[in-house]
Image (cartoon, rainbow, N blue to C red; front, side):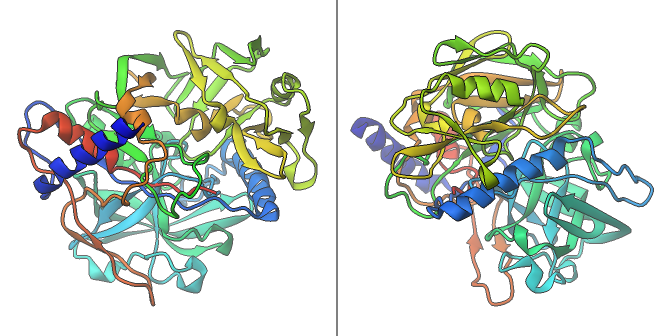
Amino acid sequence: MIASASLTTLLFLLLSQHASGAPTASTAVVGLSMPIRRLSRSQNLTLVAQQAKDQRDMLAVKYGGQSLQQRGTGYNLYVKNFVPRIYYGTIAIGSPPMSYDVILDTGSSDLWLTSSTCGTGCGTSPTYDPAKSSTFHNLSAPFEIQYGSGAVAGYIAEETVQMAGFSVAKQGFGVVNALSSAFNTNPVSGIMGLAWSPLSSTQQTPFWQTLASGGSWDSALFGIQLTRYGNVSGAAQNEPGGVIDMGYTNSSLYTGSIEYHSLIGTPQYWEINMNTLTVQGKSINIAGASTAIIDTGTTNIAGPASAVASIYAQIPGSQAGTGQLEGYYTYPCSTTVNVQFNFGGNTWSMSPADFTHSQVSTTECLGAFFVSSIGQGGPSWIIGDAFLKNVYSVFKYSPPSVGFAALSDIAIAQNGVKAAVPSPTIGAVTAATNTGAASRAAVGAVSSGPLGILFCFWLASTSIAFLLW
């Protein structure tokens, strides 16, 4: 442990002298990575219960097939899980570019930001001001995104958007001028959807898909590694949270080969088949309910009622939750729960630390698996961050597929590391602010040089951002 921490510090110091501006001109890889932060977990049981209920209800809207599909007017129903303990990164938008923190969500496809006209309803997060950009273009099309307990509304526009050193001109996105107060999550200003274009409420091609299909990347894919802080005592309010690698896979973060699984049907969500699920050595019956969406925007794991009940039946002392915790289960915190997934190849283990959603008493914990209320026509399972923290995940454009690889020692060593919050790797831009909010500087990206392997490690050490509750 000491050796790993020392290695992390040494590599960071070596690389800190090589910081500069935009993407490199390296012929080996056309791909860059992006930074991360974490907001500490709430210890308030009432708030934990409310957040648990919100997560369950929001998934029902997000995946329940309740889309309005009013494409002619730009309206359509969709949901994003704003429950804290979410991963977020920084984008730059406009000319001159301003930076904003956005949730990185592989379970949705829209990019939207709160606007300067949103008022107090958008809280204290930085807001986008179209008047300050020379590349803003209003498409004059309204849109609304309906959540389980609130909504966002505004209009569709085009702008120059940058992320991880890459830029897309005339990127379509939603400018939000009305936002339910329930979704104020400072410092996050919006969402960067990383799923496929058919899901887009704004009918715009997602940022990543434009880059992947247009040949901007050496490899038409992006990789994600998420860190774990839930079991770390004394963790700061914000911590490094992992990395999103765009246009390449970061070989310093995984070992062995990447195991790919083809998407089901026409690409919309990152949906694959799950072969087996094992808990405490016992196989859980998932026959007829084995489709799984890989969703970085969901904290935990949702599944069919019968399967979830069977999971907790393997844990003595488990009890079904009631009230706001309906659909969840509590279990003795002293129990080590071992879970394994198989998607048609290797078996992937989930750390017992990730099975714990939160502690609700001195002896009882809330489990990460909960009952999905999506209903008929929706996916069987939503696989969120509780599992994804245990693998290096790859989202591939062609052929459409999701890949998993075992985490390397370097990646594992980043879990719980007390380190400085990373800076955005989007070039030299000014961070946007809200009225009364303090200005922040966003500098970053890395130059090319002889430290290829160390470069990859630094990017991995300074990448996305997440809120932990």
